[in-house]
Every structure is written in structure tokens, then in C-alpha cells.
Length: 145
Image (cartoon, rainbow, N blue to C red; front, top):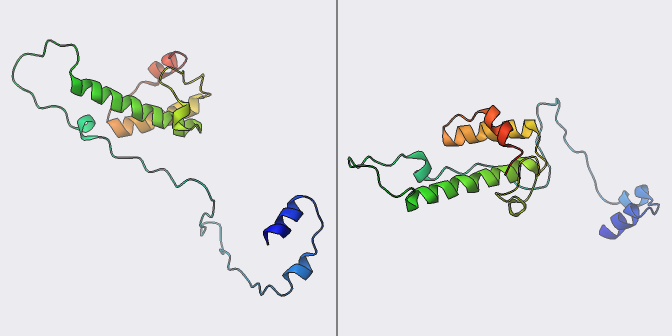
């Protein structure tokens, strides 16, 4: 079967009637209307967004004391890294890149993003992180790393 397919793809003439004569093929049931369809596309599995880490969804409990004197705690840096990783992952998915092709120092525009892709990313980020992101800010910053 593969040899015949390879020959056909290479441009060779194939006598399909003779080839399929004893194949025992039958009818295939097709949907009766366009809304009764099932995708048979082969490729990556549909994307299911992961649940955000607990450190991003639950604010830290107040300690009752004064604010710490250090500019950022280890937990803040970890949270910032988790957000950055998620933004990079979404950027890769929305632009059709592999995650390793998207670096934090590259611009959205430099990666080939257009305004519609940015809007989709912003809406998904807003939903995942429960915050509002101004499109004006995104568009102003889109050209800078």
C-alpha cells in the first residue's frame, strides 16, 4: 500500500480500479448535515490551559506587621517567574512557535504578532489571572522587549 502511494505521489500512473477490485471496500457513513461533524485532523492535541499555581490565585495572608524591608521576597520572585513562564507559553501557542523559540527579551512584534493575536493573548491572560490588562498598554509596549 505504501509503495503504491509513494509511486502515485511521485507522479506514476496507478490503475486504481485494478488495485481496489478485490479490496472489499464498502460505503462509509457520512454526516447528513454540516453540524454533525467530527474532526479527523491529525496533529497536536487540543490545548487545555493548566490551572494557575496556588501562589498566583491566593493572596498571601496579612501578617499584621510592617511591610518587609527587602524589595522582593523569594516567593515574589517565584510568582513573577511563574507569570513570565505562562506569558511565554501563551505567546508561543498564539503565534505558532515552539516554546523554546520564544524568549523574554524578544518583542511581540519581533515574533510576528499582530493586533488580533495580542487581543487573544490579553483576553486569555485576563481570564487566567483575574486581572484587567489595558490594550493601550499592551500596544504601547508591544514593540519593546
